[in-house]
Length: 237
Image (cartoon, rainbow, N blue to C red; front, side):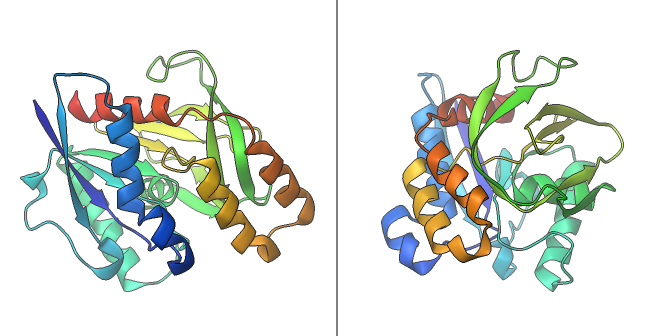
């Protein structure tokens, strides 16, 4: 079985990091290939640079979509963000499989009638434990860890959306809508080396105590492959 995934690229990696780590679609491809431990499925990938207005000619030319993170906010008045919100609404109306990550998680809420805003808690950085809600078994019952990097967060959910998990400062850290949308505020595609270098470059933007705690947290193992496997299973179901 082949699973063809369209990666909706909503940002570019900083040039000083892209040489070493690649662009975000590369990070997702590496994550999902590493998480693909079954012998009955092969993964194919197509990238659509939606931050540059590039979209598929036909929605069904891939089996599922992943919407990446971005330094932009979903509520910014930028033409490419407005166009992306409309595309998310079309995907939802067609019940096309969509996994939203960070900005993608927030965009799903924003486009479908929820609300995203600056978080009162401030920056969410570093490795954080993500605790599944007791009302669903989609993620299992055990907490898992992801690397986070966000200042915005979802405050209100679109109708029909279920909260799957939360962190200490982010009550809506993972969601599902129907059987076709799955979102995470955390970054399964981030590994400690990239997060370390990204935080260092952005250091002046963070309060010192949040930065120091985030850098220290990167010594802990995160569960990237666990979430990557969930993404694959969700997209193929």
